[in-house]
Length: 371
Length: 74
Image (cartoon, rainbow over all chains, first blue to last red; front, top):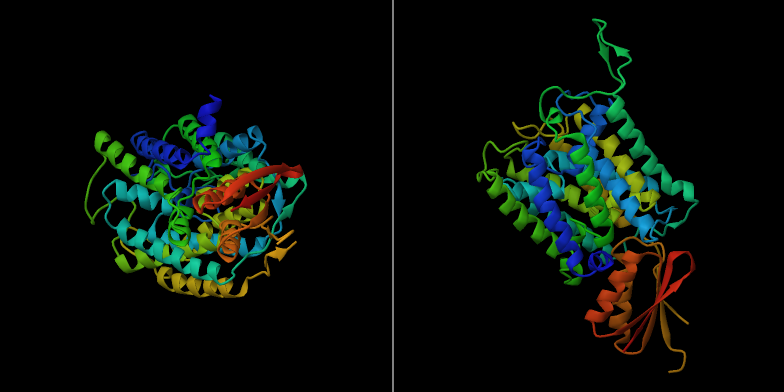
């Protein structure tokens, strides 16, 4: 057992994690999750935002146990391997903003990097434009990193700081199970404060315990292997290091094979599940998301895993994602199957401008010193 | 060249800054000793991997509070 666990921090770690995600994500689709959405960190945060009433798009409201599992699985791994380390203070408000803009961009594309790779592996060729945009956004982020961009240093924080995000996740789990309905609509029927979709993608989900178990397992593996769907591309461009990228390649290849085996591989551009075909805004949305994730130091999954390790700044990013997901639907930013919504494109442009300003203005003197 | 140790303090920095700072020091020195201070297992692994791939020897020393002192030599 311990040799397997040591294996996870070796170069095989990301490959094992990618393989597990590549198998389990399509299986979750078979068990009820929306098409090509076995796992989508941004979509699932959007569903949670809807379930909490932060937006009222009735078709995308559900408390996704996978997200809860990601944080708690990473927490368990961090505690078991003495890596639970509460910390905060690295520009939390800027990270909140980056979380919001990352979600705006991702919801114009209709998926985070995890889902972009899973869509590709399911034969949704519109994902290609999203992935190209993601790479472009990451490349732009690297320009800022190379020229001295930094959100500054975090500092060790009291233990309680690290427990906030896990506590929020446990609370969400309670909401999911209890689903309180003490509001009343105009006709006197029970409604809210927790909302679950009865139609649409929000109503499609694998059984709770299976989703939670998958989330816990992936959260554990990813904390150990440092799996990151954005760091993979970043490290390849910046450092010519394929350590994390191998995990993404494994994810795509294994998910493709699993989809084939389960009869879920449907190649084409049109009529793909929860997807839109506008190549420019698929590209643009993910370019914004890629830039925001890169400036924040990792993909949305990685932010959840770090939050599970006690990183209060990543937890702020997750908070930004939740609030941003609410705005994305309330302000007609998120795309629909018909294409980009009224304010999607302009929000992507505004988001890119704001992220570029963040990239240009946030820097810290971190020179090396001679002893 | 006595005491000519380059120190990189990467504690508290997000990915990939610890690796970038180490890479900068490696390119600058080409030879010698570098001491990198990091505060997470992730940075420890990433910095060690970069140094090994660049042909430097790596010694990791665990310090209190989950910090690491990584000594690179070439």
